[in-house]
Amino acid sequence: MAISEETEQFQGLASAIQKAKDLNDQVLFSHIKKIKSNNPLSFYQAGRERYAGERFFWEDPAKEITITGLGNVKKLKAASNAERYREVEKSWIKLQNDAVKTGVTDVEATGPLLFGGFSFDYETDSTLLWNQFGDNLFYIPAFMLSIVGKQAYLTTNLLCSPDDSEKLFIDMINEREAFLFESLDGNGLVANSLVMQREVEPEEWKRTVAEAVQEIKTTDLDKIVLARELRLGFERSIDSGKVLEQLIAEQPLSYIFSLEAGGDCFVGATPERLIKKQGNEVFSTCLAGSMRRGKDEQEDVCLGEELLHDQKNLQEHQYVVSMISNAFDSVCEKVMVPAGPTLMKNRHIQHLYTPVRGISKEGVTIFEYVENLHPTPAMGGLPKEKAVVRIRELEGLERGFYAGPLGWVDTYGNGEFAVGIRSALIQNNEASLFAGCGVVEDSTPESEFRETGIKFNPMLSALGGNLNE
Image 1 (cartoon, rainbow, N blue to C red):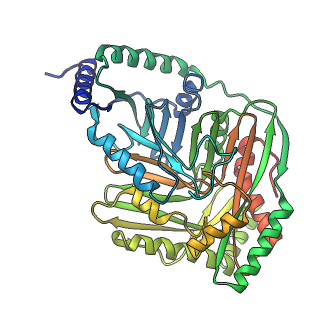
Image 2: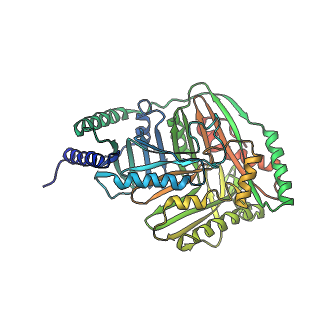
Image 3: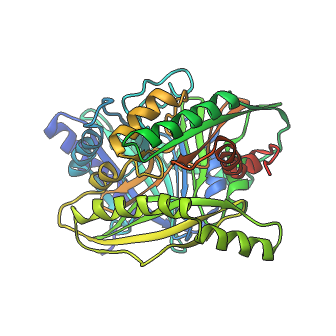
């Protein structure tokens, strides 16, 4: 005879609490249930007061998976060193090995799920700009709405201790679920007024590009990616929900993401997948070489053709294809790469695009792929290690999570990480926007400055800033 959902939850909680007593440690409990489809953005906004600073949002370009998390039952942070990927993975494996799950337990992107990211460079100290995030930040949400295909799932996570009470937990779950769904009647998004838009040290950045070009001409450095910052100020505190709403509407072919930490929020619409793992299949994206969109269809086609035949951009793109293909070779049984790039066209910018697919070797985790792939030449340069060192010395920008890996992993081994570009760090009523470009031997400071200006546009548009031509 089928048991009721509340009875199943109660029995699962009792099992988790008993396991916590046996282990004398905390045990993760998750209950997953199908629900009627809800608007993930409304769910995100429903938690803006009770769960401020503990929300995340994720939507892939194909709209196959959308995830919204509220609250934080467990935070995972690793030391800022080369072992950070393995440390986070080790902590996650321990949690999920002891976890108790009830309800629907076989759907990817549901159940206990870890969401977060890594900074671009673990050897760069976090200053005031990124001090809420540190070098890496992952957490398991208290409540999570997953839209997988067209089906919605609600996951409730709890961390059980030896002295906890099943009855108190059930009452708390019911009370908080009722609060959430009562708050879904409207997202309350309001517009905000821009009062300041400032380039951060533009002339100094151009001089840095010129210096990098000379170094490339005279050393074994082939390419270096240099990024810069644009600072915006607004009349009132920036509502990340409003920003997400704009990004969802304007950037349908990008990954839309948001990750809160304390009072700050890292938000963006990145076109670049780092790695997706689904069963034993893995997917990555080579995205390097860019051009603005045309003012009409004819100009747009001409600019696309120019990009497809531009040797500087083709060279940049091939660097990325070669690096990702080689990284896959070491951990895949089979690797599939198209013969040449095509165009990926987003609202404000178009890119050279080559997808890479592989069949993963047994036992290779998504964190191993993240470690092997980050940073790609599209984010760092070549040779990889030297480029990262020179970025650290030359750039004058604390990248933080900008251009770092950000994404999720579930207990079934599935997951996806994107590269945190086309992004902004929101801090109360101000936002720092970031954009970079690949500097090679024939780069010029003015052309690279214009390219980064175009790359600011997706976030400028979403925030209500003045777009660059």
